[in-house]
Amino acid sequence: MNLPRVARTLAQLHPLQVLARPIALGGRALGRGPSAARPPHVRSDFAPPSAAFVAFAEAERARGRARLAAIPEGSLLHAYEGAYGYELGADPTVPAPTAWDAPVASHPFPAAVRARRLAVAARLGRPGLAAELARACRAVALGLELHLLGNHLLENAIGLVCGGAVARGIEAEAWWRLGSRILSWQLPEQFLEDGGHFELSASYHLALAAGLLEAIELAQVAGREVPELWRATAQKALAWAAAVRAPDGTYPLFNDAALDAAPELDQVLALGAALGLHDAGATADATTALVHLASTGWVILRSGERAWLAFDAGMDGAAYQPGHVHADALTFELWIEGERAVVDYGVSSYLADRDREETRATRAHNTIELGGVDSSEVWSAFRVGRRARAQVCRLDRGPAHLAAEAEHDGYRFLPGAPLHRRALELSERELVIRDEIVGGSTSACSRLRLDEAALQRRSISIEGAQLAPERSAGVWHPCFRQPRAAIVFSGRGEVRDGWRSGFRLRW
Image 1: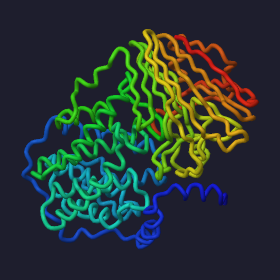
Image 2 (image 1 turned 60 degrees about the vertical axis):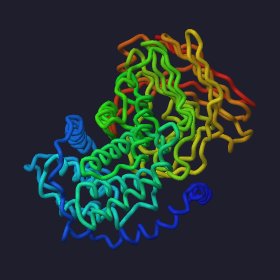
Image 3 (image 1 turned 90 degrees about the vertical axis):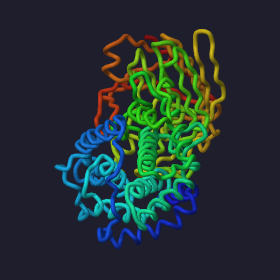
């Protein structure tokens, strides 16, 4: 065991995560799922749902089926997603979930997602769900994931308020109040000033924003008072989603994002618009734009109708939630004429295996690797020790170009404490990348990953630094474990008390 690395990892955790972990492990060891006896009554007197709410629920059913089919059977992730209840809807011919013999069914996270799906199904007119809703909400209430915090605890709270909204009785009121208290505590903690979720993954952001929207709709139709904090947070989260919406309607794949891991961005915006929380006209693309999401640390550059770029120039994730951190400081993705061309590696595994290592490694991203090591100390499946600290240094909007410059200190532990500084300059037909390593003496490798199909469909030239295709075949994963062919270019150099390099993409 690497004790210094473990110590660096533990030092960043929230005290509550450490204190609550023995309780969580003890509760899981007891193992038995909650009883379905004497469940609260589930309401049946709802007003008809909006077309947007119905469409969103049906889209989630379809996405859940496709997602589950793509995940390897026998894995914990497959078991979790199989327990989410995405198969539910208004159709009474689809059996209510009865998979409580599966060990993961009573784990708080899948139980919370299932509680929300059950509540939505009840709101759509599906009868006979009281017992399963009670089991799901009881599993959450008895096992709140305080040892994890982050998106898990927020999903716990959303599941409880959804269950409490559609049911009546003393126990339903307890679910509502417990979930509401957690949301009052965690929404300001987890959603940043610019509206982004603090784990800095667009997938988790959209999943949580969608859950909050469903909670708001269910509360409204049940006649419950919706706290203003919920609405204000949802509005900020929707504005952030609109800001990171790429020309093809997708989003950047930084930090464990995958296109099948969350509702489609436009569907979330449509549900928000139906609830009066988002102006649909605000998603219209500007011809030229420079957007700095300062709390998230992302910079969005758009030059005319041809080029759209997302630059990851901030911190690598929530301070005490390491699970979805990648060692990708100063990476970027580029869309050319509406198509993703320079691509993020995506997510190929959630297991502690070589695929997971590759998913999170600096070498898998469009940035510079120094000394053959990662810019953030990612290890195991969901751990990180030493972290890169990045910041934006300059933004410039010229008459024909947009520019952003940032730096990070993730390699400060190497001799000479080298600092990586990167400047991007985008115009309609070219991107100029300038990299500088300040200080240090080590090796450097710059990499660029392009979607092979996009490269074949259009003429893209790479000029400047000695970048050449790597011998091994490259891939990227727009959806979880669904590889597409990529071509990876790399260029190497030696840092001797500093180093400069750069290249230019033209199309």
